[in-house]
Length: 181
Image (cartoon, rainbow, N blue to C red; front, side):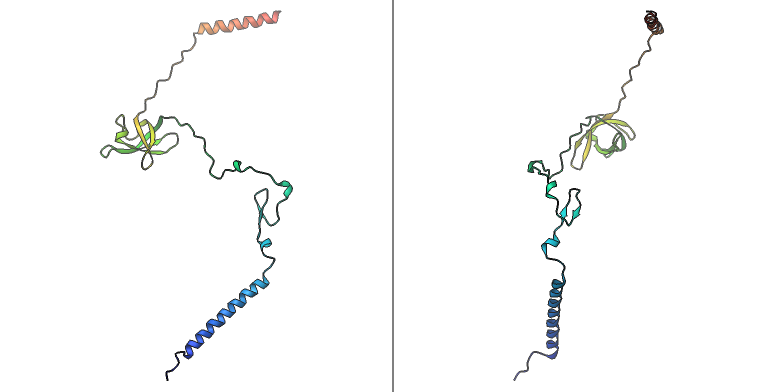
């Protein structure tokens, strides 16, 4: 006759496994029995009119009806700010042998890539330039780049002195006339 394949060690491991399963089931039942409250009502949370989470339901008299069309689920559309087509900046870096560089806009301090194909005139580092921007493969690129030319400011000539004196005298004469009357 063949001997049984169940050894003492195997029986002991099986007993431990069964006892652990029973203990776990017992702990689960104890937790359910000692758990506070009656289930779903204790798990609900409400949001009040100020956006705070509370355990009391909201007052039905303060209820406001909202139309579904008025609810915006996405980010609201931003009005486009019209930027001038011509921008002004300073050449931060330019490598003429490789044919590229970077321009830093004076207003926003943003840097834009510039390639030699986008140049209208030769530029060097620290030049003040005017340019336009376009979306490139890796971001915004400057094109139509040329050196900035300041327009001469109009010269305002002072009025001749004789006209100023005669105008002030006529004002004084009229003020004297009104006082006499």
